[in-house]
Length: 184
Image (tube, rainbow, N blue to C red; front, side, top):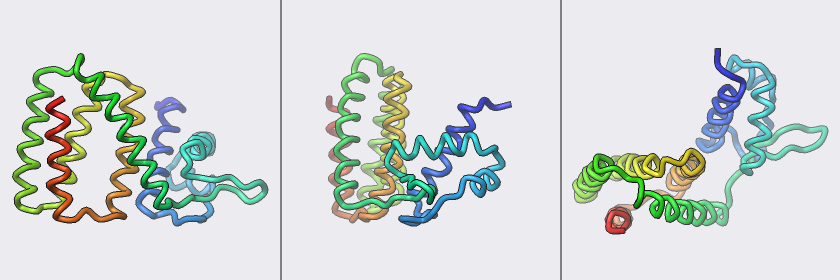
C-alpha cells in the first residue's frame, strides 16, 4: 500500500498537470470530493495536495468559497524562466563535480540529435530532446531537492513554451544554449 505522502505527491502531480494543460481554467473551482473520486483516493491527500499547490501559487483558497485555479500572466512566465535559469546554473555547478562519464556521453548524444532536428526544423523533437537533456543534468546533481524543484519548473517552462510557441528561429538559440551548458 502506498504511503499517504506518495499519494499526496500523486495528487499534486495530477492536479498540477491539469492546471498547466489548461484542463482547469483560470478561476475554475476545484472540489475536493470530486477530485478524490476521480483519482480514487481519500480526501486527505487531496486536501494536502491543494495546500501544496497553493504554496506553489497554482491555486488560491477563498474562505467560504473553496479552491480556485490561478492563471499565468506574462510576468509569471518571465519569473518562471528566471527562477529556472538560476536553479539550472546551480545544478550545472553541482554537476561539474558529480557527473559521470556515461551521463556526459548521453548529453553529447542528445546535443547531436538536437542539432540534427534543429536543421530539420522539427520543433516537437527538439522540445522533447531539450527536456531529456535537462533530465540528465538534473539527475547528475544527485540532489533530491534540486531535482524536484527543477522538474517542477521544467513542467512550468514546458507549459510556458506551449503558450509562447517556439518558432523555427528559436531552435538555433536553444541548440546554442545547450552547447554552452556542455562547455562549462
